[in-house]
Image (cartoon, rainbow, N blue to C red; front, side):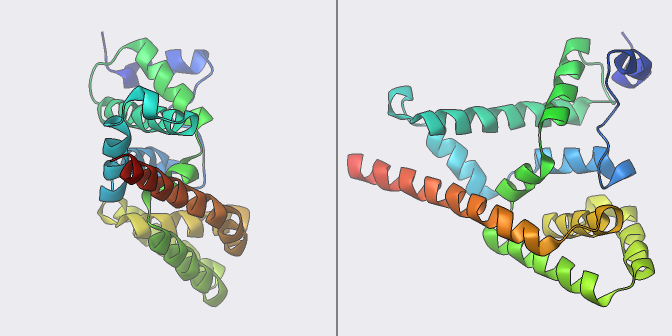
Length: 200
């Protein structure tokens, strides 16, 4: 059995591209691998906290949350092999389904702290307001060359700037739309911890 890259044509016949298109274009593969495999301490603690609870103690929201985390971990493992090792064809299709069904920005939002997330958007907004189109284009090209060396916050800033180039996205609207989601995620974690403390 050849590598999955040698079966790209076969996957294409099944209705799949190698990676779904997006703002980063040719960087899309690196972007998915980077974010799927990034595990901040606070998120690892959250996963451990939920995993250590008895199934009868988990709320329906926590069950779905844990399923989501486990799915991300599974896809992260596949992404590290994808294109480099022999993997099962059905596994490859499963990975493609996940990429097409998943909003990577929701993963980014979960894996950055609120401070990192808001700071990145503020930096990108200032750059958008102060730099010309050609300056933003040059910035993106330079950052793309060393994408894997960028911090997670820097990677998110690059995504926002690429969105500005391709979609003219208003970053302030992103803050308005996703800030409540971030708050809900943090509050859900805090609530679970409070409930655990009451039972102990």
